[in-house]
Length: 328
Image (cartoon, rainbow, N blue to C red; front, side, top):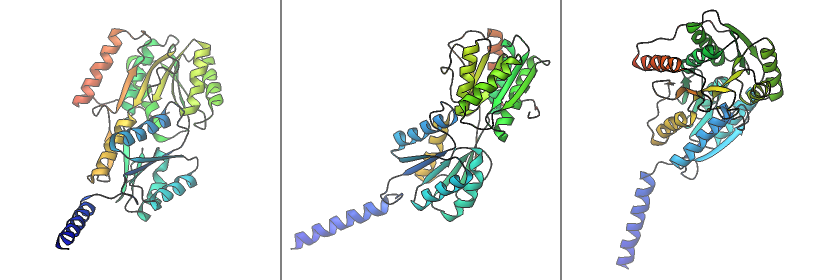
């Protein structure tokens, strides 16, 4: 009897120590992370890269993951609230447009960390990832201006979100730093999903003699790639993800955000309890944003690539500041 009593005490002590020493998340102790995207994860761009980031969190941290595509601000808020009620540890709203929903829902679920990709909204359990997308966009402008034969280029966006307009302004500034007389056409599709509309807009821009198009339009941007491939008389530049192989024969390069790396940095802090709500600035120096020339085409001269590489090194060293340009 004494031996049985001692065995019971030992087992009880071990179970109690284990329970007290383990960080619990959700109802079953798992680290749980959710992602809300404003568009389909098949876009090979902004949303696809975010989902790869969610998968990176699952594979690297052993997290349970969930994803929902949302389309309206009401859906942003509804799904933020659902994940908070279920006890998710981290919920990522993928886009500048999720800020207001995070501010409204966050205080209701203080044990859930809400993070938006873009913007500057913060709170006791709310943070934002801020990407210096203008830096590689500036380098893309230099590259584009060096190959433009007509002296006419274009920027094509989904909707007029501030980060998109800022990157287009940086692209123009980069182009004008080497060709002050370059002409930049600007167009917005009005949504992020309509590939047919993206193709139509790209064709219209090329009809106005644009021979380089910097698109940032997610799934709608795939239509622009199709238009440039079919027309065969222009170059196109990818955005957010490395899109160099979407249409490799006509893609000059891509302005990339390494979302999987950025997401993992944040998720690791949340999981180990060290995360501090703040605006997390991610730039060229952190290697989260970068200009990636297309290796399948050899049209950029060594002089141009050396110039871009030199400016990148100066930017990292803090000895170069991007010239300002007004957003189109």
